[in-house]
Image 1: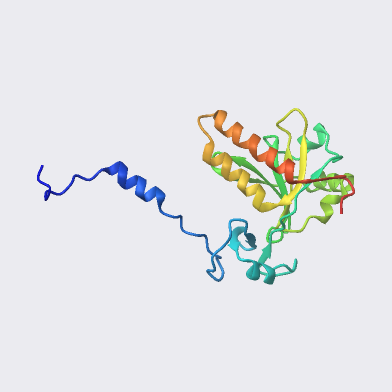
Image 2 (image 1 turned 180 degrees about the vertical axis):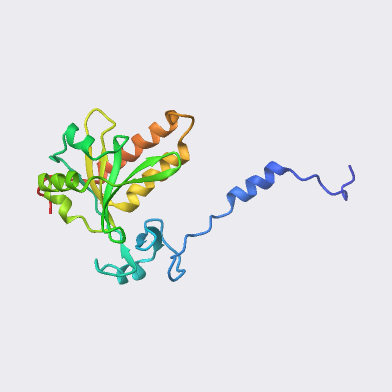
Length: 213
């Protein structure tokens, strides 16, 4: 081949160069400032949509009474003595043993959401069943509306109950949706769920579930 002849393109080399390019930094969805990897989240109340936010914008919406956006708390607690028997769980009317519960201001009530291959599926637990659960576990009456949730994992040998920001719950939903294969989900989704809960348990502060403030 003549040295002046154009070289054939190597598609793998092109892909490699593309992969080496630095990824675009995430930006605040309110002011477009660049975000760190560990950034804050806001909830848009009307559509229950999560937004990524820089710290100055997140501070603006830290008031629990903010009308449009609310900041999602970053703290997580493992509720050790949470009271929820099998009969009570069945009374909440959910088809699987993994769900999270939050008070929705637009709906004017507590809603339950559980992961599925299509994303988060919403259910409405009977008000009297939820009220009984609150009476047994006063911590539930102190969840911040729209931004905090009770995350229930009854899939393993021992149930786990967490008080977390709803961004953690939706991250779990996204992991399940992304890795789900076939009818039963497959081993990949089980591994991802195992990693998620192991990491959550490691960073969550263990507290008494019934009376935690």
